[in-house]
Every structure is written in structure tokens, then in C-alpha cells.
Length: 378
Ligand code: ATP
Ligand code: MG
Image 1: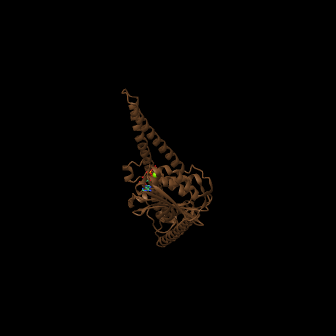
Image 2: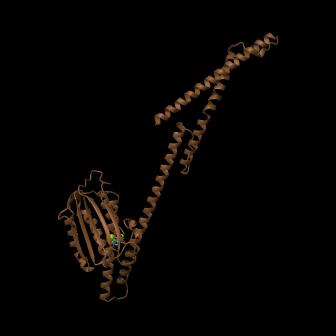
Image 3: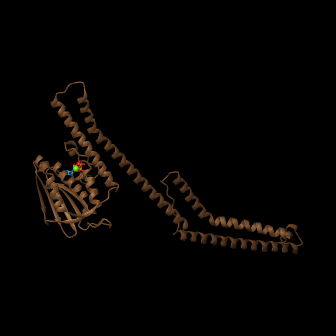
């Protein structure tokens, strides 16, 4: 491309030099012939003119005059021929200057089909790409600020009440031991909440910025989920929920990072318990096949509004209902889950209606960390 532009530019310049030379030669021949004719005519009519005679004498000075005149004609013709290109170049250079001063709303009109139009098109493309990059940068900056605001807010809320209760405990007034115990208990719960928030944040940033290295091994998904469900037993009892694990296979081994998968399903089951407490029942379905394993975590009760479904995987997103009820959370659980699924080249989807809220995770059986696994699950 670059060579092509160079070649076309050189060819054009050489052609213009050639045309200018031809024009110069023609004009000079025309001039010399005419001067000679005029001189001959004057001589014939006995009206000799010293100046005309001198022009026909061809001594050094006269030849020099012709040469200078020729150079003049050549220059003017060459400049006229190059004028269009010069104008184009000057427009491109103006545009470049504006861009270098930060004006990215500029575009150069593309005229004709020569090396300059190619240059102008490249410049326009460059400006467009730059604009895209700047927009992305701005968006990233905005998200980062939002993130910081959210973090600050979420950290401050429990901290304020911890400080409040500690002040009460260390204050002048003597509190009776029951009240003291209660305040200490609240401060403890809030501190735990802070700890979880910080852990989540760490976990999320590590996952998000690829700082985590995956340890892929053979994992039995059925066993992993049944163990997790057992670990959650106290929560099921606490929330008066029953649970069931259905699987079409007794064992389903896949290549994956076991710890990350545990975190993924931990988040999904945790949510099902937290948000499905009204539904009395939680169902986990595993469907194994040769290439894929599909896991569905289903709870009943509260339905996520349709317009919020695409948003719940965003970091810090919490459905209004959950914010206003006492199901404390940071809104990072599903963002973490999505990250883990992505790292395994899998997919995660959600549907929610009166027949239940279903989170469907699809994972590759033969996940290979060194291969491009994305897009394998349709
Ligand atoms: P945490 O970071 O502690 O998990 P969280 O549970 O609020 O906080 P996510 O797990 O990301 O955050 O979930 C985001 C939101 O999606 C929740 O606040 C809730 O409103 C909604 N949600 C998630 N899972 C379910 C579910 N099984 N049923 C109904 N709503 C759900
Ligand atoms: Mg959650």
C-alpha cells in the first residue's frame, strides 16, 4: 500500500515534469521561430531594429535570456499542473494540524481516486479509530469512577454503624451487659460484612484483570455440586427450604479449575437461597453429554423483572427489590460467576418468570486452557 502510494506519486511528478518540459520546449520553439520571422520581415522592409537583431544573434547573453525564460515557463507550468495536488496536500496537512491540536471531529473530503485520496481516506480512518479509542477510554474512566463511588459507599455504610456502636460502647453511659452484648454482636456482623465485601472486591479485580492463574484438572461436577449443597444445609434449614439435585449421569468429569467452579456454583446456590426463600424449594439439574455439561440452578418465588435480566451480571448491579429488602449483598456475585464461566469458555444465562428463576451454565467437557474455547458453545 505504502509502496503503491509512493510509486503513484513519483509517476505523477515525473509525468508533470515531462508535460512542463514539452510545454516549455514548444513555447521556446514558437518564440524563437516568431522572433526570427519578425527579424527577417524587418530586415526585408528595411526597418531594422537593434533589439530584434540582438534576439536573433544567439550570443551568450541572449541564450541566457532564453534559458531563464524557459525556466520560468517550466516552473509556472509545473506549478499549475501540481496545483490540485498541492491544494489536496495542504488540506490534509491542515487536517493533521487540527488533529494534533485535539480536534477529532475533522474529516477530509475524498476527491477522485489518486494517491491523495488514499491518504485522505487513511487519515479519516485514523481519526475515526482515534475517536473510538477515546470513547472507550472515557467509558472505562466512567465505569472506574462509578466503581470507586460504589465501593466507597458500600464500605462506608457498615463502617459508619461499626463506629456508631463502638462509640456507644466506649461512651460515658454505663450500658447493661445485655445491651453491650447486642452492640458487640452488631459490630461483629458488620465487620464480617466489610470483610466479605473486601474479599469479593479482591476476588473480582483479580479475576477481571486476569491476575489469577487457572489450575485445570479433572473435576466431577455432580460430586462438586452435591458437596456444595451439603455445605449449605444449615442455610436450607434456616430458610425452611428443601433442595433436590437431579442428574442424568452419576458422574460427570470435565476439565476445569475446581476452586473456581466451586465459587461459581457457590454464588448461584447462595443467590437461590437468598432470593428464593419464598419459593420453599431449590432444584439443581445437571445434564451431562459428551461435549457439554449443563447445570441449572432453579429457585421459585421472586421473579426478576424482564428488563433487569440483562443487567444482573454487571458488577454492583442489584435488583431494586433486593436493595430494599434485607438480603445484604454487593452485587458482585454474578459478575464473578460470569467471569469464571468466561474463563472456562462456557456460557451463563438467566430466565425468570412465574415458573421459576433459572440460571443455566454450560461448560465444555474437554476445556483446554491453551486453546481458543470461546464460541464453541452455540
Ligand atoms: P453478592 O455480591 O453478595 O452476591 P448480590 O447477591 O446482590 O450480592 P449478585 O449475586 O451479583 O449480587 O446478584 C445480582 C442481583 O440479581 C441480586 O441483587 C438479585 O437482585 C438478583 N438475583 C440474583 N440471583 C437471583 C435469584 N436466584 N433469584 C432472584 N433474583 C436474583
Ligand atoms: Mg449473590
